[in-house]
Amino acid sequence: MGAPTGAEVASVRVPPHSLEAEQSVLGGVLIDNNVINKVLEILREEDFYREAHQRIFSAMISLYERNEPLDLITLTNELKKRKLLEQVGGASYLAQLVDAVPTAANTVYYAKIVKEKSLLRKLISTATEIITQCYQEGEDVEEFLDEAEQAIFSISEHRVKPAFFPLKEVIKESFRTIERLYERKELITGIPSGFKDLDRKTAGFQPSDLIIVAGRPSMGKTAFCLNVAQYAAVHAKVPTVIFSLEMSKEQLALRMLCAEARVNASRVRSGFLSESDWPKLTMAASTLSEAPLYIDDTPAMSVLELRAKARRLK
Image 1 (tube, helix red, strand yellow):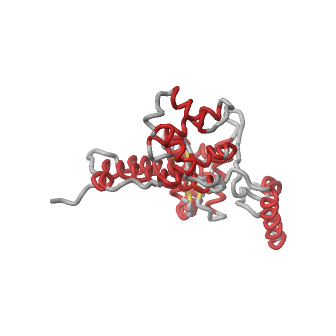
Image 2 (cartoon, helix red, strand yellow):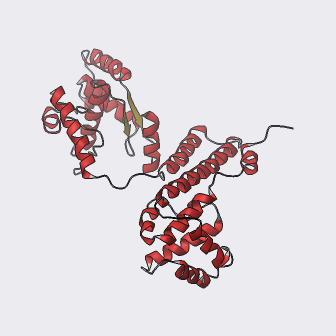
Image 3 (cartoon, one colour):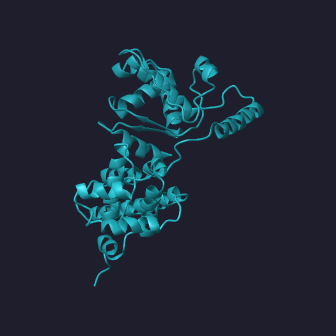
């Protein structure tokens, strides 16, 4: 007999879950309605493994959205309206949820456990699908790799992340940043753009910055962005990727080659090059070839695909 496939292994093993944690979350919400605000920041209905718990949590959400009291009586009545009370175990099971949890103090902690188990199940399901597709012939490998990476990345997007940070903690980190900058005493503390006036105002592009270049057509937006990317890669040695949804990689490369060589692009396109242009172009080609600069001209690329590719380069 051959080795079991990924799908067969996944079907034999019980998916990760914690019924105790799920019961503790539901019981904690019934004990203290205020805790549901924090739970809803972490969990969704589908994060529960047991179907009965999904239905109970769904009923809780409905009561919460209608600003109605959330207790054993109202929850029982809501499930009766949906004709789901007996399917979830009856009123006796709802009472057991409350009895199983002495306090609602640890409800958020239990919710994080439920979320972690849910993410593991999604990861197993996605990995199983990837394994199955790997055995199918006719798949474009590069396209499949992008799809697989996007699938994994979409799971990581649902991780539990802190929603609020106390200002005093943010102030501490900001003050440490100021101290580091004071010790360095450099005019450019981020990634330089190559434009002195811009760098003087921004001190370079900083981590987490979102820079939007806007302008009317044919105002030089592409040329400006190419110059910035080129300078960052060639002079600052920062790995840089250019995503182009309009111009081809050949067009972009030609622009950068002319800019680096300081040769008129119209002369290059028309073929009327002087003898002095060739050494400049050769030197520029060598310089750009050694720079950590990449171009992706995939058309109709989604934001998710762009992020996945950028993370891979990183």
